[in-house]
Length: 395
Image 1 (tube, rainbow, N blue to C red):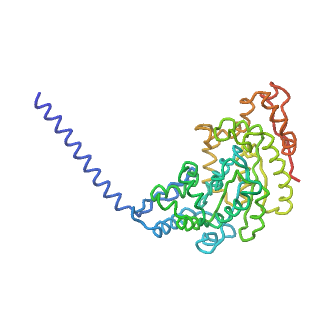
Image 2: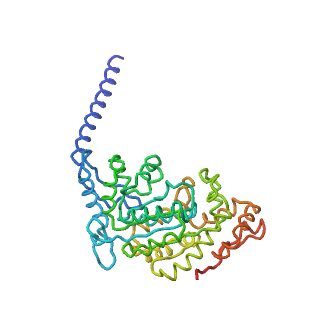
Image 3: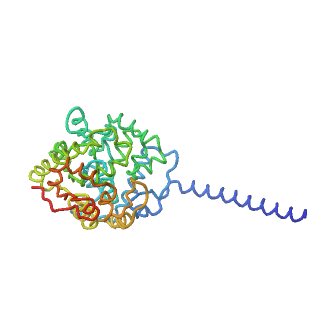
């Protein structure tokens, strides 16, 4: 018996020694590869970029910026830039002008899904909800309008100076900013840099594409951005059926108690105002303004994404197709997940709301629904099976 125990102990001891030796050599290998790139294009297969390299833990800001610049250059090596230009023509760090685009929408209207589609483009820097710190409000003028637009303009120019309140808010709400994976993967390695305006400005300037998704700003206020020819920004208004939007908001906790978010009459007054502004913008800025309904995007995401990308002057890159392949076929994850059966999700409200709830929304949204081409339900049975979409025009 003692020999058996001794043999068992020897086996265990030998295995432990081997494991420790393996860890030692693995750590040595990790250190030796601290600044080595592997294949950076692997990180874009699902539209989410996880850098395939390790930084030395004592790297300076200059080191990180230099390595990230090299990473972007490799990640966009197969990207066909407009006019056969080079990456350097589109990066602020080299005196170029980025391709800038903005999505204007409201809460729970499909903007996160669309924003993530655009963010699947290699070399995109995603300013996700830069007005989050303003709270649950719709900004249509004073007291926040001027500063909100000013902040958007600064971000489009990668200027993070005087963003103290925003950066302080971001430190308490990190989970809300993970959509900018290209920044936050680096933040995981160097947390202190992510609250440094100088680092953020220099990091942002490396990217040829700048996208912003906003749900707190009225479309009319974006005209100041359209008028700024140096920005050459393109703006897309994303609209959703008020019944679907309000049904989705009903399942949130942050919307409760905020009139701009939970009251149908205020929401639909906004939709009417957006329609009137959209008509004017379409006439005055025909090449830099466009509208799409969330339902149309969801029913045929590939075709409409290609149209949107042509408008934004972006290439329908294989990474974008891969994102759509993985995010539009089936639904899983929580309510904030972008993995959805895109053809059914926009109309889920027909099963979730009862007819009296639908009638209440329709009563408050009659004009908005007519303008944006949304059909009313006749009764309970009709509600469960009808097509709520009609044609619409912005003219």
